[in-house]
Length: 110
Image (cartoon, rainbow, N blue to C red; front, top):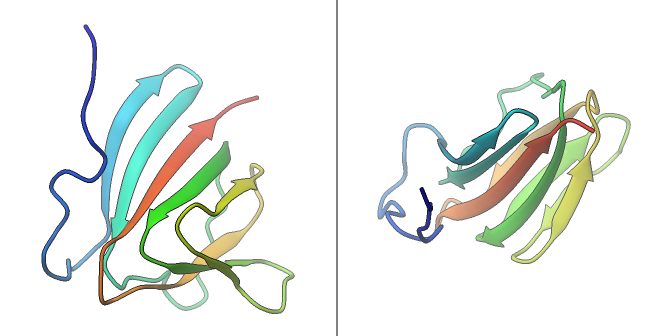
């Protein structure tokens, strides 16, 4: 079966209580997700420590992404992407509260 859609369909008009994460495609060593943030950030002292590599691109909105050991977060604007190796601790420090921030995240095992 063919799967198609538009990553911008169904974006919220108001702030959500939590990020929205939707799976677009899944295979044994691959998962692609659309993440929609509406002002959310990682909880204080929380770090993502994932067992898979991740490649993420920001499609809309804005975000700050902080990696453990870095003094300042990286500013992400539409079109910016970053590769996050497995077990590279990171956190989302800020997302734009004025508009939906849309991410496309590709999780995979090398």
